[in-house]
Amino acid sequence: MREDIRSIQQDLGLTVIYVTHDQEEALAVSDEIVVMRNAAIAQIGPPRELYDAPVDAFVADFIGEANLIPCELVAVENDVAEVAVDGYRLSLPARGLAVGPGRLAVRPSRIVLDGETGFDATVAKATYVGVRIEYSLQTSFGSIFAVADDVLNPLEENTAVKVSFKANGPVLIPPD
Image (cartoon, rainbow, N blue to C red; front, side, top):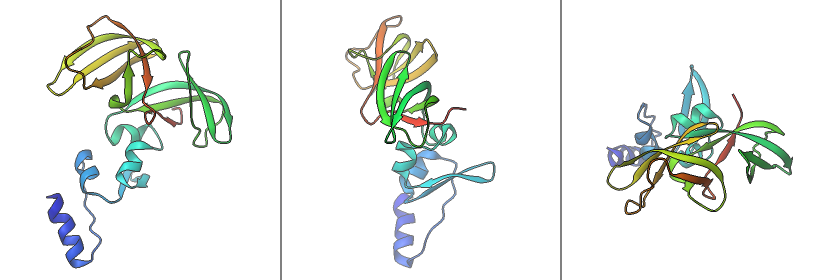
């Protein structure tokens, strides 16, 4: 189907508007996506931009699965924020946010488990799904979801781990 839509668009020199509620399909067939919320535009952009840099929690969760993690912006200088999550500190683009509460949108595949630094979590559930392991992690601020490709060395339930993020992992979004 993806090839058919692109072929029609190229052959006729038309802009094709395709409406779908399937987020993966939208990411696969689109050059640009318009995310709507309550009959208003929530965000417009190329698929990768919406996935990697959602403007808020709605878009983050709508375009793929995202963990929404509370954080504190402890300092902001030159649009770079020093962010704290349960004692773990990192620097991120501030995206117009000021010192105070914020949230991180983090894709499950961009979570690093059992590194040397990070915040504390406990493996609540580990589920083997063939090509990866899916983890439910319990933290001081609630549950988060992570996936890992290492199916040969799964973490056991009730294991204490340090949780951090890949370099392209977290994105600051406004608090509720």
